[in-house]
Image (cartoon, rainbow, N blue to C red; front, top):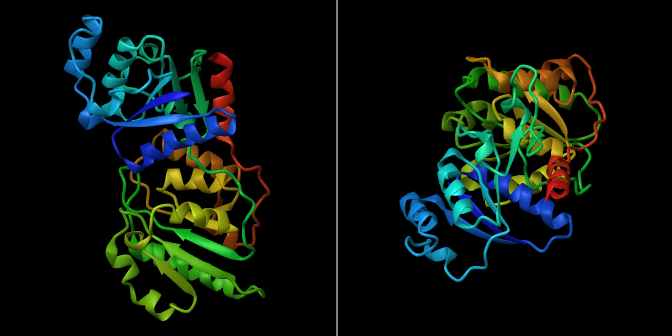
Length: 314
């Protein structure tokens, strides 16, 4: 299966696409992916190629001498028009957009949309639209989780949440105190994101507790490090702003705890997180401190589930 992947190079968008491709491979398809940067695409040239039947307008060099695509996949608003025009140029290919597009969904052959982005009143979901629980990712549960290994993932300020370093330090202190009262020793690893204030890990608290917490700022973690840690951790504590990491931890088969962040805006994303928390897919730290235990949940396999539906339609 030849796939042209239109990319804006944003890490979250790339991970979604890789999740789709990995699921296709698990479904026993030989997948050949060509990554095409949106920076190398000219919508004007693609339009000319379409209306001229291929006589005018050039494809980017990366696509020269490539086999015609079976699928053309785009994630991110910057890919939408190029995705539509490439589909016009190669009408036998199927176009797939991995998000709720700002353009009409009918312009794409398939759309894979997270449930929190598809929240119309009494929605009638078209046959070519697949609703996923969270965004897709390339993880699966490899059953390598180490008992008593805790991973703390810290995000930062976003359009929905503020970041209070003081409140985060208090929560981490409370978590450490809770874990220290348990008999078995714990491995505790903390990492940050690009949105985390640098001053957080410079806090005196981490120097005082260096023997308890292993610090790995995002600036020193190599590619693939986080996904490997998710395969090893038994419990993952994630700040509430980090939606993708919450679903990645669930997909990896971890117990997932939720660290609070000051909310500045309510929308379908925050509501979805709250609902999953109420259903105990995510266990709030406050409940854990009061003695509530993690409930056993089946790991998410959303990429595999969506791909099964996609293949039925193809």
